[in-house]
Length: 102
Image 1 (cartoon, rainbow, N blue to C red):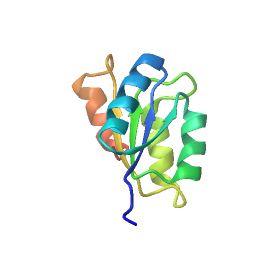
Image 2: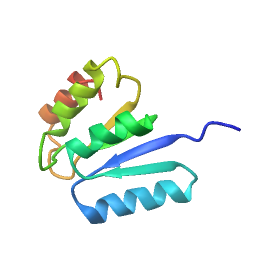
Image 3: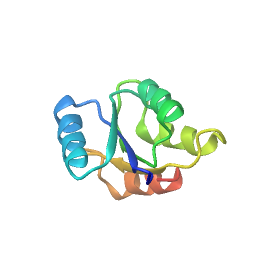
């Protein structure tokens, strides 16, 4: 059986989380959800997603810091990470995202 592409969507806004997850499921992806950095780390360890769509602002940690933690951990390395934000969209913040491996 072919590998089904796994995506972890992390956002603290339940409406955005549901919208993104629903769209991705409808086109056939295996989707997992998290709303905090802690939940995200647990999901990454448990489900080994191929892609993480990660909100920049989470209640317990900045998404950029979480991205760096995942990229620096040899046991968690592997997933592509897309940082997403509706408010932190300056060029400086975009550069920070690139610097942490997104």
